[in-house]
Amino acid sequence: MSLTVLIMTDGLRPDALELVHTPNIAALRARASSKLAAQSLLPNITLPCHMSIFHSVEPARHGIVTNRWQPMARPVSGLVENASKAGKRCYFFYNWEPLRDLSRPEHLRLSFFCDNARTEDGDQVVAGEAVRHIGRDAPDFAFVYFGNIDEAGHCHGWMADGYLRQIERTDVAIGMVLDAIGDQGTVLLQSDHGGHDRTHGTDIPEDMTIVWMIAGPGIRREYTVQAQVNLLDTAPTLARVLGVAADSLWEGHCIDEVFEN
Image 1 (spheres, one colour):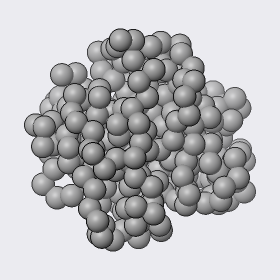
Image 2 (cartoon, helix red, strand yellow):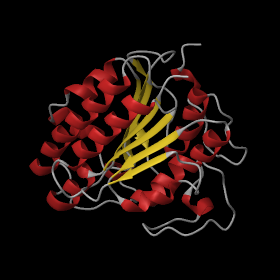
Image 3 (cartoon, rainbow, N blue to C red):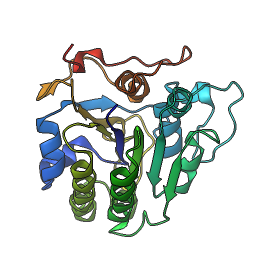
Image 4 (cartoon, rainbow, N blue to C red):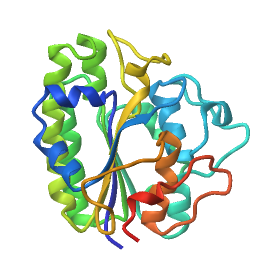
């Protein structure tokens, strides 16, 4: 089994890619199946969105509706738990601490956190750690979270120059990880939400529209996904890539059209 990586670019608006120089994202998209009009969920806040991404249920089901975690009243097994139970080695690399609760204890083989999402080069530090461990350990699944773009949006405003320049810096970090993965690995790159002014969390298109693209062996190249895609579809799609079962409680769907066969 080759490496499968989920790269999260927190707060990246798809329309921002038209205004920046991001050769690594562009190169990934050129060999990927992509949807630049995928959709977030309400409330489009980071922790609720990530809980939905990993557990494939809406916030009303998992119960996390703010950036404060609480145990689920009716637990749902997430992507990491299902992969771990199938013998897959799962690694996390991230720079926003509340994401530590995306999986239950004893299912991660390695977890790296650094509180640097508010520094311009924080994503590159996270990328460096991911590259080091991916090259040394060859895990089955890695989650690489980049928080600098979202922080730049809150600081400068979405689509402001400071926000756009941070996307370009994060693209360097993305390139580091893509080089480590190589052509034999599968990578799904997405955002969790967009933003407007210096905030997000509403149902306007600027907040709801996200990037979603997947590339790797057996994935259609240079293909625009026709189906509707939202956050709930990530876990079922990655479960198919990893060869593990989708949980019976998941509400999303595998985006089958991205696969060649």
